[in-house]
Length: 538
Image (cartoon, rainbow, N blue to C red; front, side, top):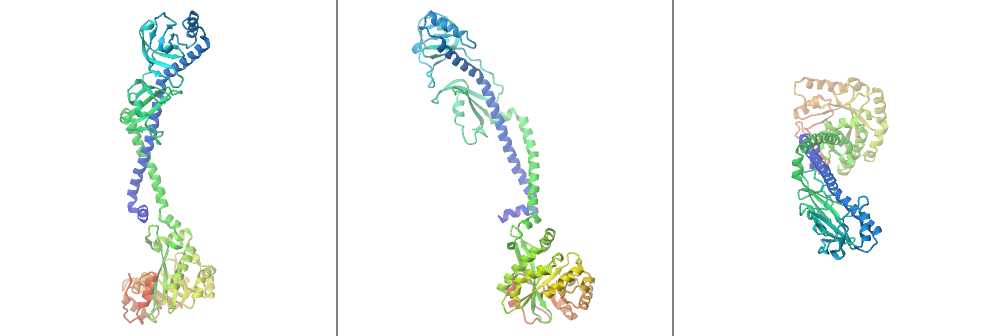
């Protein structure tokens, strides 16, 4: 999971992520287009089948109406003059059929239009299991004097109707194939027109997705039947034939799909970038569990011993990477999370220090706060957890001057902190918003000189200014801490001033986790020699 998340937040992968999103979106668009296209083709097939079945539906309705009329009107003895007269009445009805015969057991005894000798029709092609109707398909009508003509004979209760061949409706789509069949209630069927084998194939295509994507063996398929299910039209359309017949439209649809996918994937990519932006990630995952504390030792030049540490915060990103303050502190300030961050850091540091630092050590523990969070009451309440440990740890507040301090407000709060027994230091003096007025007017207990001075080259303007700054801070009566000390020579120079109280920097140790800090305390040299041998811990 962390590796997957890193792909989402790593800028180097954004181009590939965008391409992947486009491909995925394009695939979805193409699939949706294929489904919609399939629905269009399917509806076209249904419409075509219904159009071709319409004459058969009308004929079926006429046959049913004619048989109903025969039942109502014909009451005379079969083949009698009255019988023939009654059948002629039926023939004159609107939409009535006009060729009737009497054929008990399939043997024609007489017709309404001709005198004939008995004629055996033979075994019927179909015996309907719905209503017992006997059907002979496409029989020559020579036996009733209709030479050269054919018709379908339907017999119900001995009385038969001769229906003429139905004029088939021409297909309007040359990419569609069909087969029309008569279907019994049992499922048995008799082909009537079209290409053989289609009905058998189409009737097996039912499935959970057939309604939405009616493809079977590379072809669209449909089964459309008359309402009573007696005649069905099975239709198929090869996917290749459909695409070939509509090649220009398909090409245009793919092109439009590509542009649509580009727009959609661009919006999704933008949403993902916002969701996985550093600020959004930090805001979502800013919890006590995501906070890491490191400890940078502070060396007392007077004793040569480690007198305390500065607690520095790190943040664990959602992919497990460690993020340094220069990246997330601006977000903390922007979102107004400074107090929450301080509370998390104080609680975690107290837990780690009290549990792992041997009780023989007494250490000063420095915490950084933003100027806007300089609130004595809140700070006292936040640091109360150290009160039970006041024989082991002295909590100190370092004011990070990332914004202008309101001098009068700062004076009141620093005085109140002093009454609560909490010391305050000015951090990073010489950069940002620090100024001589703050140095002179604020009743702080100490001042930390920014690391840029100690890290400057010997003989440089910054190196000379460092000595002037030390003189100025000393003249203001504040204890001095210099950070950024990386060489023994710079340490000896600071010791030689007689004005610097504490130093910290990579010469002593880089910020380290609690386990290594405990080990560092155990391994430190006591006392520190004039030319220190302490090295930075990696």
